[in-house]
Amino acid sequence: MTKGKLIAISAPSGTGKTTIIRKVLLYFPEIAFSVSATTRAKRENEKEGKHYYFISEKEFKKKIKNSEFIEWEKFYDYYYGTFRSEIENAVNNGKSIILEIDVNGALNLKKMYPDAFLIYIVPPSVEELVRRLKNRNTEEKLDLEKRIDRSTMELSLKDKFDYLIENNDLKTATEKIKILIKQIIKKEN
Ligand code: 5GP
Image (cartoon, rainbow, N blue to C red; front, side, top):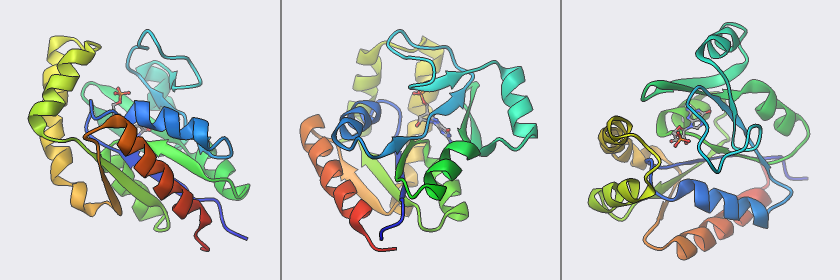
């Protein structure tokens, strides 16, 4: 029998990661999605408990104290954390789970779970990334600048990942990730 797999998918903000992951999840209904907690405001198209659990900074800090997160990061001015319960439920039930977390979060996950598979979605270029972030129009100007600055750091860590998938075209990248995940979940380990 194959074990449930932990699959982290990371990429700089604006790479198309969320769109790709949503499409991949529809294709693999048997794979769970790790819903993180965040202190940032909910975007218009997001749903509580589906995309994130939107909580206050006070609640977040309480959860850190109670060891409810296996990893957490302060990212821009907001906190993001992966619930220990989401990961342990999946692992204990032999279910595979996808985590959409930042680059540092993925590398920390690998330290705790060396069997985790880390996928990095690479943007075509920093210029294209900036263009996409600006077009997305979901961030205030200051947030946008912080995201652009952080992308440089995130891109420098891409070679630490197990798999790199280029996103020049959303459809092709999604197909490549589907094929990759199909191979990962079949692995005997
Ligand atoms: P956004 O605000 O665009 O939804 O997410 C910002 C960044 O936080 C993205 O890179 C996203 O993948 C990352 N992120 C979301 N949830 C978590 C989490 O639980 N842990 C970590 N380390 N990063 C997360």
